[in-house]
Image (cartoon, rainbow, N blue to C red; front, side, top):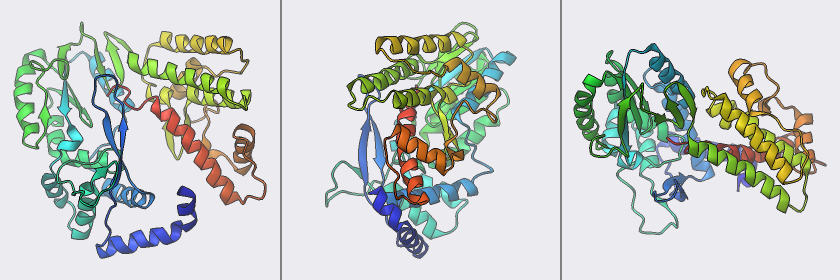
Length: 409
């Protein structure tokens, strides 16, 4: 368990270090977790590593980020949306092309990936460690005859995204250097802004370029439901969970529905709870509204959708919350989506409206544990209070993140 590991972490980290340096570290099989992508769609397969493997993977990820920092850019979806908005408003392009890469992660060819890594990494021990991480099978129940996988990068690991970026490094470089188009790629979602007269040429160049890497890209003509094209001034389109409607930038309908459902489920949970703590209800709802900062990262729906310009939607969400309070007969001090949006947009550094859990001292952490989680801290050391606080906030943050997981990209 996490608690046992926490007590033994120094010894465990020494073991990881020793085995990695001697080239003997081997990853355990990953546990398979299925995440629904909605009705009629095959679920997403996520690989869950053991706690020890999680630490080793994080170390590999940090190492790769350092090695590739000059060549691999890790833009947040919001930052890419800023760039898309700017490019559209400049009016240089009249056409958009969205390409979907089929089964991206499972299609990555190990041999090709290792070949690309070898261009920057000479140490065979590191390459063997990465190779072990991507070959370890993902299983629901481990069996003796489970074979290592020779294709695909397991999804959900801390190294998945950077390995994908390294795999497509040359393709990205090629299209970003083309000054007559704007090229965006977020994992398996490719979008190009261009001149409509160049669109067919772009398609006939892009499909074989990805195919050479073992990746199938849907042709917009043959699979318009997967890859789509259209004119910027008259066709709506979605990208990275955002929806562009001739100047209005809003959140995809499905993302708004997910948020409403998760807010409703908090109220329903309160109704059926034995404790019925209005303070905890207020705290959880407001955390969903504002999001938070935890472990140096901005979390939550409002942070993710901070690039929308559809204020009407935010007012509708505030009204929806007020109606939920009436429906469930509770009186709580609600925070507002409208205000959270403006704080994130114009006062992100200074705001106290949005909780920054990284700045909480022991007194504040103790208050959160006793007041909201009904957890006695009697006889606990500061280190133990820290552990229990982080454990509970991590759980809440995980819940918050389900609001933007698969936000439509």
